[in-house]
Image (cartoon, rainbow, N blue to C red):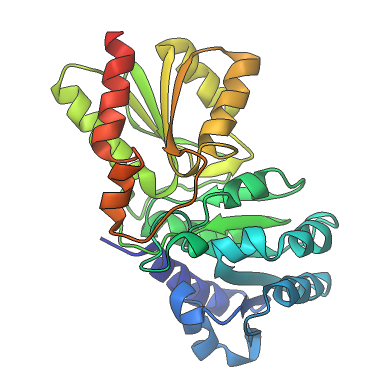
Length: 308
């Protein structure tokens, strides 16, 4: 079990050692996002801006104009709600090379509850022109995504989770922006996941196999640009798709899948995720079950679709 936020912090330090143009900004949550480690090793390239997210993203934009590669880090809720205008106009509109880390995405925020649970950040970022959107499944992929983000030219949003997650990929994982990854082959139904829901999707696929249902499980870490070709192939072959995400079903993974299917390959679709409501404080797994987002919910949705 590894915390993606810790992998993010470690990756920043490793990246900083090989790329002197990398700088990091944080809005008074560096011990939570784990950017603190970069600050300790490279104090001259670390900017602690305090609780001033709007200023931070404008500073990041300025640093990008002089050749730096800024990683601006804060909680995902503040990215989507507090600094929407600065990200849209100061970063995305001029296509500046700024990398944004949205920490504590979705349900797992400890005791912070609804005020800090970002269920709309991916939808917001997907809707901004020029923005690339990445949501990783584990610590290994998160580390690789940090390096891929630094190589990528242009604005990029990386969503990181707070809690410990099972390791899905090994060190040979070939992470590429825009690519999806099949974790299990199957023809009866497809389960498509992103971020920290991928371990749950993988487990659901295993359970379905034991029950005689062949599930094709696919992890989609890039929400924009979206791997439409893979989705169309899967939809054409299975005709049944279940999506699962730690996000509102409006505008996130489920929304992206629905958009593609409606235009290119109609198929039956069930979207699992936050159903357009605010969250609450509580144990992560209890909340996931309450919101219909846990392993048993994925299995039930897939079984119902195949049996009906």
